[in-house]
Amino acid sequence: MLTLFSNRVYKNTFPAVEVFAVGEEIVNFNSAKYHLVNGITHSERTGQGFLAEGQSLHMYAKGTFGYNDYFANSVIIAAKKQRSTATKRTGGIVSVSGRVQ
Image (tube, rainbow, N blue to C red; front, top):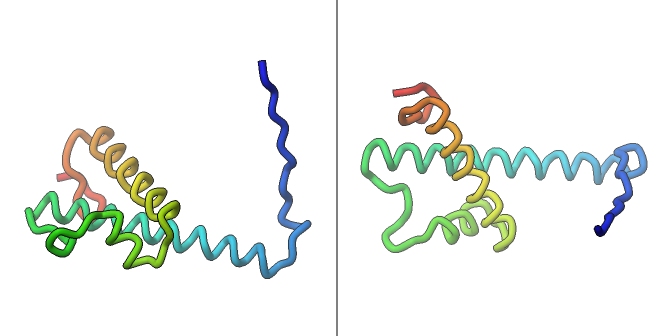
């Protein structure tokens, strides 16, 4: 069995500028996820896509939010998981506002 150890990271060991930068990136990631969940939900409910003709969700995330491939894939996966969880939990389609239809 392989045991992995990691060092714990404490906020007080970093400069305040770096701590605030990480917090800002978390907020940006969550707002991008929220934007994608709303876009996917809206396109499923109305039948109108929010992507340009022939544009993939990956390229949309990269262009809209300025993410590289890693973060674009991460935000897409997180948005799809949130969408899937909300649909399974409620048994219906979740509206853009979050209410069950």
